Image 1 (cartoon, rainbow, N blue to C red):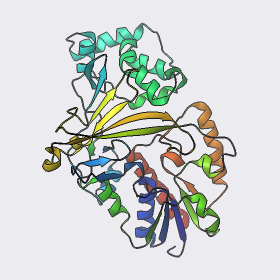
Image 2 (image 1 turned 120 degrees about the vertical axis):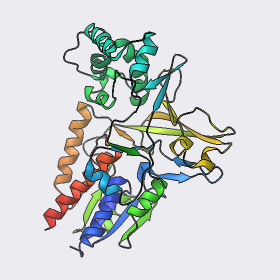
Image 3 (image 1 turned 180 degrees about the vertical axis):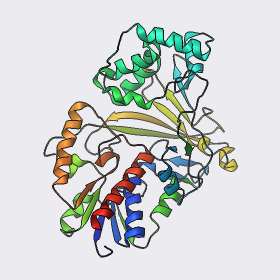
Image 4 (image 1 turned 60 degrees about the horizontal axis):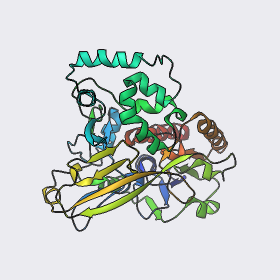
Length: 380
């Protein structure tokens, strides 16, 4: 097994975990092709030299999980802070707490409901539209929270995020957003949550710290694929439509643009993430990264701060794909690429891009661990 050859495309969580498992458990060597000049995929972070603030280069990343084996595994490589994610959203000139909770409901309706009163009120709001079998995101959202809350906080934010009418999106997308009739403003309900104490950069550095791992940066799979041995195992975490030269047609993706600014003030918005729910603001959210590490006093109290505006965009060749658009048409198209990949016994598709799934970080790690276990069993 140690003599087998493994090549991995991408150093995000799926690729990094697979590399760590293959080298530490199988004793085999791994070569990783990374098209960017750094490891870590979209979870990459770096320290700003002027302020000492740790910035998440591709938007905020908060680690959260309820999967014990994932938590046990990742804690081999980092300790986590006690950070808990709280999100605010601006709508019609006011700031509301997100996800939707009793603060949000009472503020929007100008009421003072108790939890049971809010439940009864929302049930009546939901009943008005009589959506017992929601067929799309809009109908699903209204069936969960009623039309006024949907139109205030979900409808236009979704239009910006996905670049289409919510009626064109599958219902299951909205299930990622929790709704509460308590004053709980925690964004995530998972058992464990935080950010790596020493940052994502240090986490990936430890994951990939094995002399049997070789990383070739600024290197695309397309530029080297014809040079690889026919018997080698290929673990591919890129776009599957690109892998097969778009033979069945291109998959649809959403991309992002980030606009960075360093400001001469100690605190810009008072929170790590502020959403913008209305269409008159082109971006969906502003990240202020010092709020992820308030324990780093020098950076937190620095008289400067760094913000990043996040703009969703339509994916075009040459930009970065961030989110799969999992409607019926795209899922059928992906199944064709997945079937094509299965014809090659040396090829494994993995990660958010490779599997065309909206994975969180912990689900990506779990998927990598399960994939490795299957690979190991197959080898044995």
